[in-house]
Figure (cartoon, one colour):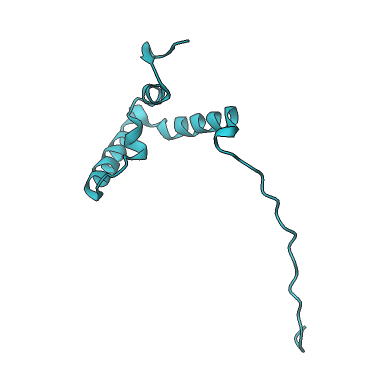
Length: 97
């Protein structure tokens, strides 16, 4: 089955994310081995995009997308609920106790 986003074919998950977001994923996540200068330029570009009214809803869209992925595929994250240990009261000794 083929996936299309806004009339463009998405061949892999990376393509789908890029088409859904309207920007390359690397812009937000970074690239392996990027220098400090490259990182600063990437973050500056990301700030400019977020300042554009066309992309004002992008942070909310990303959160919705991430939530949907976690809900649909919890096995990807190996999420295990942690049991919270019972809180113990410290033993007080001495005159002030």
